[in-house]
Image 1: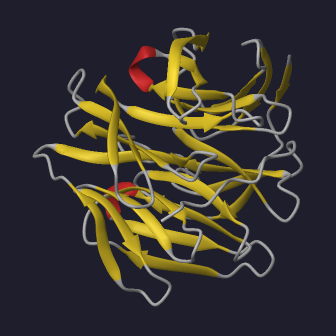
Image 2 (image 1 turned 180 degrees about the vertical axis):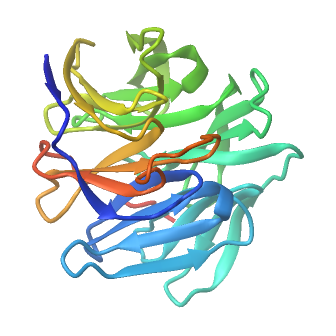
Length: 286
């Protein structure tokens, strides 16, 4: 196992309350990321340093590119679509009092897998649902506490998933219709090392996991062995994604929520240049 403590750089110095959801958009050459609790969607262009900010009308858990342009958003009250001209409309609206959106990911077939959780983090109060481009919704898991990282193996045959309080990174087999079956643990984060949050999968099929209250990002092999740890000075690392023109740079979001004396970089967007090689992510087919 390799441990590195000085490999990161600051991409965007920010004070996001709950930075989350880094996603590389190859069509624009920009990284999308967000601040959930401040209802903000950010973009960052590493080639020029240009940044943009868009405010949403409610808490936003995830944002992903759409195949036809624009964005799909996992919002407090459901799944919304933002057209290239800025027009907003609901794809699927299902408000539940006390519940909000959290992490989401796009599957190889272009469907959106979107998670929810209770604001009070009540046990089993969240879900993981699958949305197709026409708005068809299917609840895949209905006993989730904090729905977080979701990703697929490079060949699309496996799906990885995190329900944070379990401390596990789970793996499913992907079925012929794009669903999942045969859930089992891939790895467990030990007590004292933090909690698994967001994840991404690299071209070698290894799973990178951000550690909330762990101050690190870890890489696990497809067999579940821990083979790399990148340590960071910020305790609440929330999610990770490969970006850049060669998908070689690992971007990390961080949070400052709940910290009595946050580190100066808490809430910033960090990057580990040349960390590995990512896999191009599909856009939402809607």
